[in-house]
Image 1 (cartoon, rainbow, N blue to C red):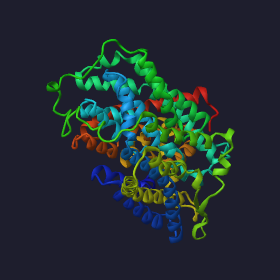
Image 2: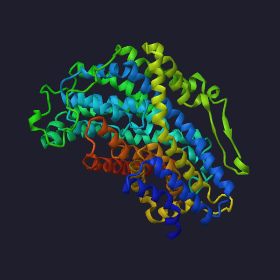
Image 3: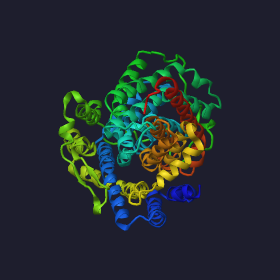
Image 4: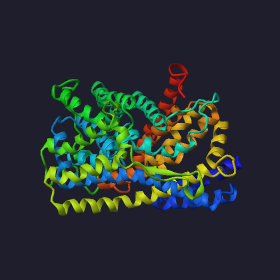
Length: 557
């Protein structure tokens, strides 16, 4: 037990600094890395060259992820300056005057689109102020946007939480999956199977999120969920419009496109159905008069006076065109029928056997969505939208400024994880992560299905990112499943799902969303309102995963 606690100290210290002292991840992660260096060097006798090699391997891995984050944020900044975001927003706001319908479209479906395309807190930061501009109380807008930004998150930013967050596991695949020695032949296949199972769990749980959102909205504003429950058929339909294509894409295409392409399918289907009155209640629902609003509902920004129509706005087709092209390019590049994947993967830049160790990592530029299609599309947006060169340069500069804190956090987070993973390699002993995993497996055993999503939630709460949660806890979850003798893929899927559920309460996202609507200082209130939903999401998924493995998929590895 003592050794496991010592091994866990880097992660525990990061958690204490970020939760207890409110440190940003860009400051807490370097401390976590330094703690891992000291413990690995003293407790695991890890030589300097191995410590340096593990850190460099983590940095290379982080750079691959940051290419995607940079590309996604660059597209968003260019679209803001070109009027593309205003065009997309305007196309969503004139469908219905019923607030319950509006919140499903904006928070749930449009939020899923921005999560699939950009991720990293974008949906709440874009959706919350848009809803405030439409007349939503800022508190309601933030709660709705954050709760909605859960189900799509596992496949956000074109799948980064799956194939970026679990990339560090590549060096662990040599471990036996089960006691019978079953192994996975291809690492890509391993990630795709993990994403497919996570998609299935999100389908079973996440389809009810729109109903939860409208119930929370009417509970906050009227003290009752009754008016929210009245639209349960429409809310469930809205949930299924997204989760059905999402689970199909996750199972038959891969982890990059379920949220992006699923939302692009769901949006027109749901909007068309609403325009025809399908399942739409005849009695329209709106918020109570402003004089009846609670003191916590509104802050510096007045509802109904937002800037969603301010500045330049281009037509709907041009506004959506860059994201449509991104979806098409990714789809063509990933589907086997087009046979382009081998070409995109043909060039890899990397450093292997770093400093004479067995550690190595590489980057595949053209298969990385950050370069192709994100940066590729970013280069043609000025021509598509008539954006002047000066404004485009501002977008590039703004993106570099935004990416700096994330870069520091990811470099040190992955450096820390790689050190913890490789700490026992030279001495042929259990690494820090395996020591932690053995202790956890001994305590929880098969009950780990219920614990795994909570670990993911905790990771997202601490780090502010599903990707970072998977980076920190993915190897730990893998090792725990191996030691407990339970299937790996469901366990990692629950980690990814938990990280998505934790997205609605993570400090980073809550602060960012509240800042956009002028409610800074209400972080505790929002987290308290969303905490139960987050925990129930993870708990229900854990039970369902347990049942699926026991009765439906007993041979899953």
